[in-house]
Length: 250
Image (cartoon, rainbow, N blue to C red; front, side):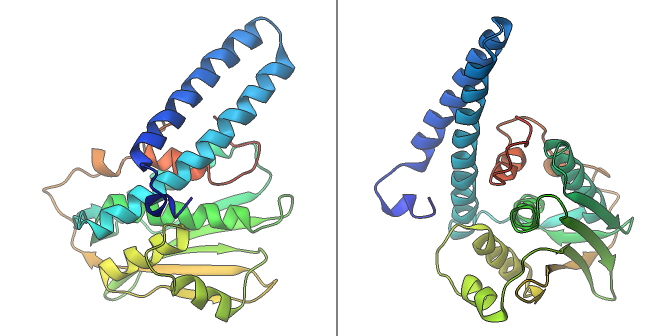
């Protein structure tokens, strides 16, 4: 899916077709459930999830395009509130998943970066953690801390991990559109390389650093641009569908 731009496929057109397919599936699902045709409704929901996972991959293509086209717009925003919104959105969408998901977020931290690019980066890291922990005993934590000249946002899990060379290989890709490609592009945009602590079968911790900014009276405490939209087709919600757990809420 990350190579769709090189295959002669228009990602925008494909996104439109998949969005229509999901909408049709949802409408038919409601009708089938009303008619008590529950097995047929279940199959339609599975079809919708497949379409949504494809849309999530296309969303990463759009995200990568934002960097290549120079559509990165740094601004001062509340990092603490943004991460709280992201955490709440992911927890809502994965409420039936057995994985433990928690957060320790230091309040009152403001940073300078593009909040939309940051949101996509963090959601990709969280989804990667969901994909790589045990589905019954997995634990994931988001940590947000303030240091002297930067803020650190970490996603920590007790999952399968990887070797250092495997992580370096993921970051060395060029012009890709997977989650780690988005991570790399965001970190380059803020001038801080990512910090990883990982070993095979020993869990995974990834830290993104952002430059601190003083609180601003010129921005809303929780502005519309960084508020997480809960709609099925919002960029934030779509990226969560990369997690292939069957219990992700539609």
